[in-house]
Image (cartoon, rainbow, N blue to C red; front, side, top):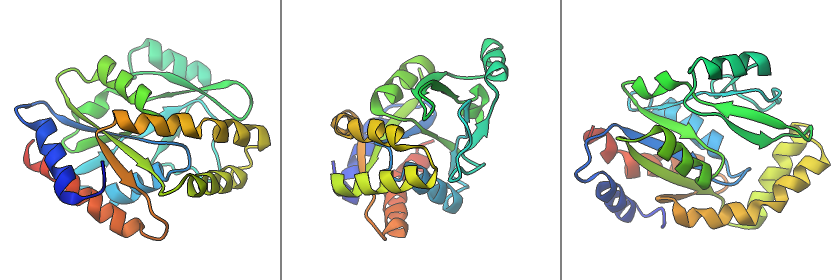
Length: 216
């Protein structure tokens, strides 16, 4: 898997060949890889074709959070909405307080005219999301990472320090980077987020997945 346009377009065409279901993109990768930044910029530029689906969560808001990416809930309200069938799923992940925060997407997010993009923490959870929620859909998992582990660690350290999440949280996230990286082999496409090349990466990503829009 590379960012070669021809090879990745070939992969996309192979995935959607003979499938008529709605197309769905799931973007995953290790913490600090730049998933949110790439997706936010990508959808802003190509809003007529793709839409980034807002994640609903019980975790505390962070300084770097974007309101277009998250909606923050009190846990009791979140649990009530979950019981009422408002969400597609509900996963839990460790937070900086040593407890767990819940994350979910609304069911009606699959009914939009654009191709939806879901940000999922890791490939295993993306595959579970597909199994539980996307039967009859054509799902493509895109793995985002940096050129080197050192760059990934640097970006993760910078982000966690800027959000004041604490040293214990940082060490916990750094400890699972290698395990997260192993999951790229279970994804469909690999995107390398190179320093100072965000615009180029977004353009290349669009060139690769644009055939999806013509096959809806």
